[in-house]
Length: 193
Ligand SMILES: [Zn+2]
Image (cartoon, rainbow, N blue to C red; front, side, top):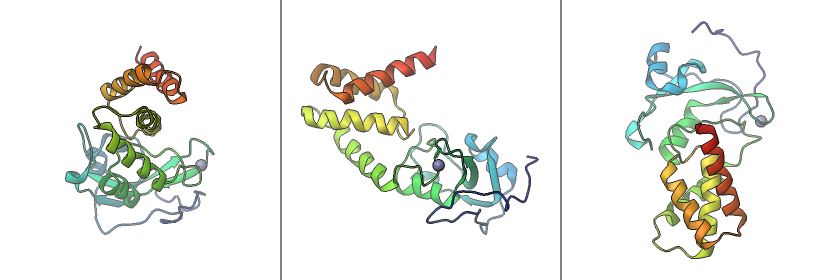
């Protein structure tokens, strides 16, 4: 609320697929409808005219789905430039790629790990997570993938994180991946205090 309407003069990092400006949609969603549809939009700098309704049945979420997708103006965590996390890009992330619905995009496309690479990691992780007795090699990849996906916010199950951490400490205690997951669990514990 109370946001400036025209932001065309703001310089944003150009997205290779969606460009550098908000894309209006054919849906006339109100500001309230969109903000009420997902907690993450409450205080976000959104372009209301870009909102598109979501197919929540395709979303991967624990509690609250995203009812709409909307272009969000954000600041890149790495390069500190402005970029837009596009409504259409969100639809792709949350309905096609299977990314966890609370996942937020914090980097511009120039600073991001490519979606292809993430998709590959997520796929490998999904295949390995259900394996009863993973080989050490598989466990090492699983542990390292878990850390990457956790840091991206794409997986958020603490119990799974602890389970993999325990497996890694037992089977492959000297690996870099094990050190990384131990550090992650420690950081989480510190943050929870
Ligand atoms: Zn950036």
